[in-house]
Length: 114
Image (tube, rainbow, N blue to C red; front, top):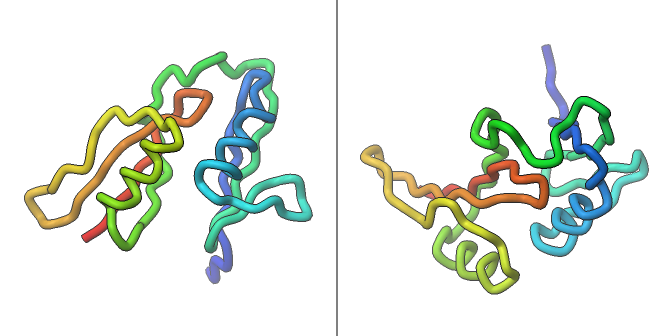
């Protein structure tokens, strides 16, 4: 199997516009021709779904993790944009650093660096 790109479809109750704005304005994604948002080799799509909760019920179940060059700089940049962090940059015993934050639906996202 040759995987050429990664796409994620995120169900939302009725918050697709706020989600798109967050991913565009805060995380720097750009709109694609299919109604989603691209950054690097990933596309995200926000799909209204009647079974979706208003806020993520298990925000830690699946976490998009973005590799960054400097986690402390990325953390500070996102903080100045009003992003809510649930975990500030912390070093893991194996050497990498993670920080965890929320999107408008309450999904947890992470930034990561070695």
